[in-house]
Length: 326
View 1 (cartoon, rainbow, N blue to C red):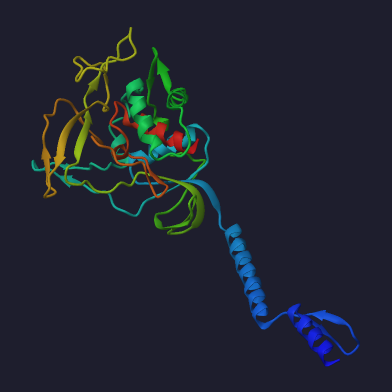
View 2: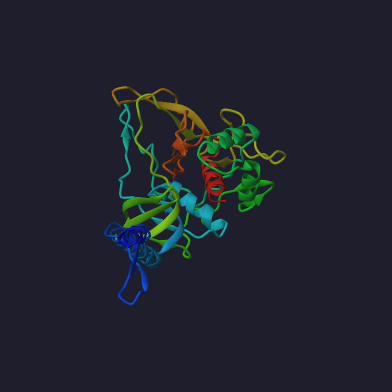
């Protein structure tokens, strides 16, 4: 009899069962299991609370950040294709560099107002990329963009948004002005990565979640950087679309600021040496001979320093923007 009771006792313990005085059988949990279940319940409650908080935070698929003309071009591209976004200022101040000749130059970009103040009555032609330039741009973009790009199709869709005269596309004021239909935020104070494709952004007045960050904030020039100065004139012919494949065009009829020549070099002591001759009207657009990567930690820096040098860097910015979001 005692052996039977011992065997039954061992069986009940192994199966976590108990029998009351009326002979009814109940399942029970050990203290260790009890603690485990409590932890699981608490974890689910915390996850549920976090999800509740996230549902209360606004979500904007695309955030544009920047203080220069380049972020304005990014915004204008999204406006032209009716892609919603929010735009905000970067708290980092723009850097001005002093050359050995005493020139003070904003290599990293100027504000929209400073850029357009002399363009009110100026017709600026858009200079499409040829096949070689498109291949260079596509190769560079593919290093940072995870999906395949039909770069020719992207350029064609962008060109369809420009005004056209005698088979030549022209920039218009709509590309320099803010869209009243989009949301504008205050200066950024913090960006936190939630996951590989989600960011939590805090500004001076708001907070929101975003999937794609497009910004024009690059880092300072480094020793060995060769800077391309974008300046000169382009002559628009009546029989041909463009005669832009000459280094410098004489007797120009339409002024532009988009041709280029290597002009400056950053020395090892961080002084900037002028290594070219000014042969045209210097502009405020600059690029690097060796472009930097477009993406760092899934934040896209759409800036001439991060794109291959081209005849029209603004068009390259538009192509990069559309290639990323599309």
